Length: 316
View (cartoon, rainbow, N blue to C red):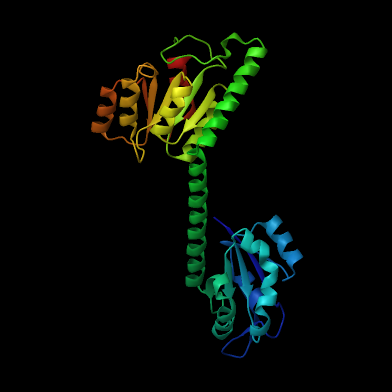
């Protein structure tokens, strides 16, 4: 992965240069730009708020690198005032400069800095350190996004919204004269039944990414609902009917077999066909699942053609 870095500082300023052992002067920003290599895509900007905002909007950097120089201690906060969008979008601020200059900066605005590179950006170790830092930040961002999506999916309001959307679709189907637009109680409807817009599938999986992928694959041919746990799915089935359940094997609170057991014990859901989805290929666990007599078993990663073939064989 190539990381995008937005660089700023007092370019070509006598206060923002490295002085090498042999007395050569090296502009900090130019050095960073030249040494970044293929791993980092760099652009420079001024410290004007308008310029920073524009670059963030169109360049979408993974980090903002500020190259500090001498005697900046007294006006650091004034310079940092243009970074409101950096803070708003939670873009990490990386500090680059001489150790003494970085120390001065950190003394005034240390809470703003996520990483300090207090020497010329030239060594492989520094590049690796920066890569590890940015990789960790991206993982944290993804985790936060997944947690927010998971929270959304577990809120009662989401389920109510989903039900309203599906009822709206059914009403539209009824108005257009489609007789098969209603949802049917579980049970096999015949292998030779043509694909119907009214066929409904409920996917139960705690992996929100997998839910999105499966829903996107199926939504053009089927009405699709999703649930991130067995508890949410059972609540859903108290209000709605479905023609097929795609059930993940491994889930944190209740695993797939436990959910299937509850489905089989309930008169309202005991005849709904269930297909297990799992990345587990342990023979004993597969045999345990098969003893519960599901209508199918698909091993992840699931190929779309195999998914559709299995669904057609069960509900048409």
